[in-house]
Length: 279
Image (cartoon, rainbow, N blue to C red):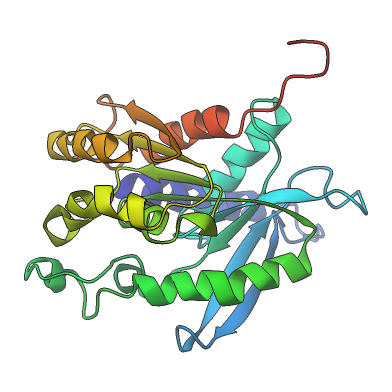
């Protein structure tokens, strides 16, 4: 997790601790609850995975409301779940985003799950095991999605959001299994992985795995080499039934891009439909 978000989570924890310490002696305290959590004993991954869920306002109060689902790797409480849940809450509340159920997948071996195979020796040094994205996708498809549908009232619309290696996983999933999600949001995706092989193969992959129309939102920070890779990827995706939104954000760094990029993406891809009679 980038340093900026680590600092944010640490500060939030400190504020909650100070708030608890400031309670008058003998005052009753209660847990601060922002969502739900459950675990899945995954056969695809051979381990237990924790899932964190944020339900937007109105869902719990209703017995019939069905909502689309936004899935996110890096979805642990000490990862990106808290700030993305807050962004969903604010955006839905101020009417700039349609309500979504947010499903965060907490990491165990992040670099294993979010990377595909590689022949690059330097890539293989980042973790004891890499190249597990196919198994992680199988976990999402065969185990997580059915469990979410069983537990919550959902629509067929699904989306996935991720940054860095999680952004790589988002783009890889679009190219290899496009019908798994409806919309794909990737911020500073690590397209350098495996000597940019995913970018090199993009044109052939979109033809081979063409599915229903999809939406892809990509934002990049001040990394010049990533911007060059994105220019190549954009050309490969042209005319492939993919609505592409590419947002260069040179004012942001790799450590700061997630939150502002997510705000832009949510407002662009998940904007509410105009009210009847206002078009």
